[in-house]
Length: 207
Image (tube, rainbow, N blue to C red; front, side):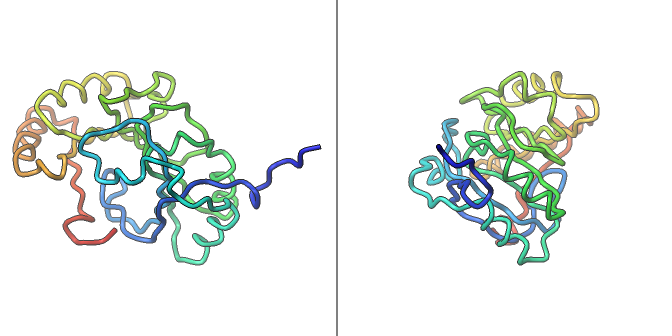
């Protein structure tokens, strides 16, 4: 008979993990432990972590070991990102982290079913693979990357679907920031329900 999986035997492909400052969105500026999982089938052309896409290229780490690593730091907040983290079932991971008192946040495109128990869901919908409608209502934060002018329409499409208390952010794509940031500023001034998200970790040169 097959033995049931426990947190010591359940494993996830981990591209990288590190203690840093959250650089984006609603929790910007907070100390956070990041766990970047391997695997993504969304395929954003401007993705800055394309080496995360192939999950098989990254080592499998047990949930028990991940939790111990995070617990060895002063972290209070853990951010699960990718790649696309919802390619993996995350229920055991969030249960293990929350049992140790950690706040759990996820950054996701919403392109796969939501698993895990989250204190905060950052939904960043991508045109390359749209979010599942079932995931959208769980968003605490909608963060849309602006690559060109048509992305404002994409942002409004999902702003109309999230809950009324969801925070709305527009974020310039890093390589086009000098072009699109002025457009975003003008857009926010005309549509003040939105806020600007900048990738401050890239400006202050931290992971």
